[in-house]
Image (cartoon, rainbow over all chains, first blue to last red; front, top):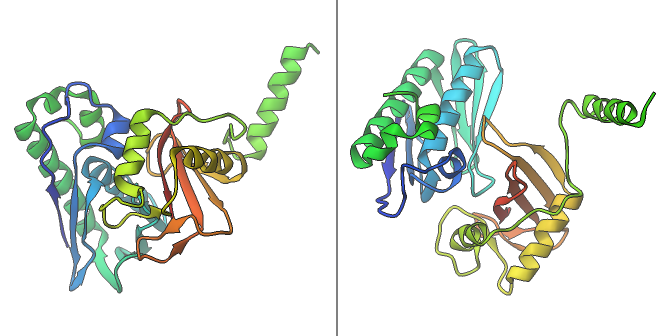
Length: 144
Length: 125
């Protein structure tokens, strides 16, 4: 599973005052790069709030690990979705915008999501030093 | 039993029936200038944003406000997902109001409303 992102340049956001709602809908926008096996579930729409995506994926993995049979990520600006269905120790991944179903071990999905959060956190801290001290960023991506 | 206690019991019973979810669909939601800009940038007929539903040509700020209010008053409400704040409202107008991300006709509108009763986003699907 390859889970990555492309972050859009943003020189307008004041990262010292960014709120959770901003992070969920309005800032740190970009593209999702998402390959599972030979399936490409990437979304290059440019407006995807990446902090929200990373935090939501982490929540989804936590719920699956906790016994939930299925969890769906809904994109913020469309009815497109990514679905994660548990099948034993594996997870079936499908989307509304791309054909096919892919399978991955739950522990691999968990590791990929953890890595995504950490890389995004480091990237934001590097690009926008004030993000490192922002409470909402810490809440959604974890402390550095 | 005084009136305040009766009211509290009534509200508690309502929340119980609704699975702990309190709906304020009769309230008017606020469409701020920022939210309007957010919606126009992604979902207005002339927006170039990809992967996002678009409102039909001819949609105005006034008609958008009317549609949003109709959705909040008459639509189906649910909690926002995976820790996102706010409430999602969805309503099918039974007529085309825009286009889906595939370019097909969209008859439904999704409105996301914050806990402060402010519209966060709204788009056809």
